[in-house]
Length: 286
Image 1 (cartoon, rainbow, N blue to C red):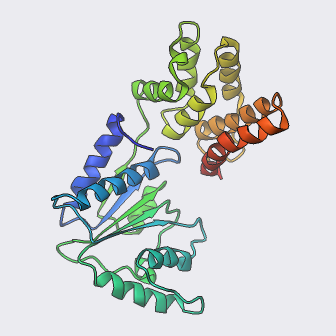
Image 2: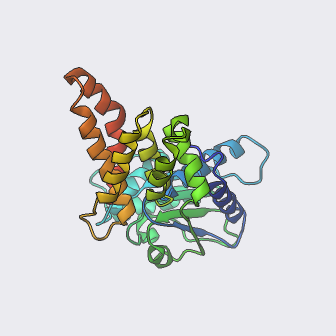
Image 3: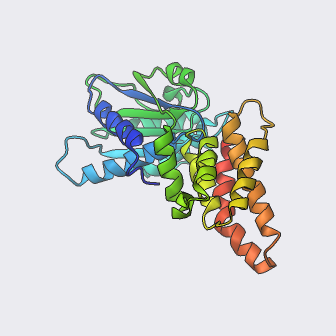
């Protein structure tokens, strides 16, 4: 998703771009709670770098490698496989982790500069074991990692950490209306809609999911029911932020209740259209 029009996210993007130009910064940690928009931020960074690669900008890398890090226990081989694939290195399943690391190291050293993006890091990864070369001075090559935990960033010896904060009330409401549509501004619905938006606790993921779920609903009773259901949802996982869980759980419950009124053919189309997005969002609570 684009962050266009999101002032806080745009500021964060510009800050990362500035850090990438700093020769003294090699490893950048981007951290914040689940659903706050870390992955969206670095995806927009990736898109921005694609633009600069075709311009006269000083900020360019000969290769950008994106890795979605497996959840713990982290499988180094799976991390290596994604890097090798981006570098067009053919990896034999019988090759040892050490051998693959050596090949990745050699290949990355051949690059004038590289950017490695490690998304969703749950526990520290030894970059030497992966095959990522040690930073040099000046640091032309960079590593960016996203994590929910600042301690993970520091364990990976980040040179700087940037916390991604939740939206303020105004920005939350603007994003909610963008997803729910102008119906949220109707006189009889707006007061309830604003309460629902507040329940999203400034989390872009939650705002997007709930806003889209309420799109097209003109009866204020449906909005009141949604608000009541949101407030009743309780997390089963004590490690999950309450507002993340309740918003996404509500989305599942809402999806199921709407399916009851559909024919089998309509239900299939409905689930395919919305279920995939909601289920992917629910992974944030796993």
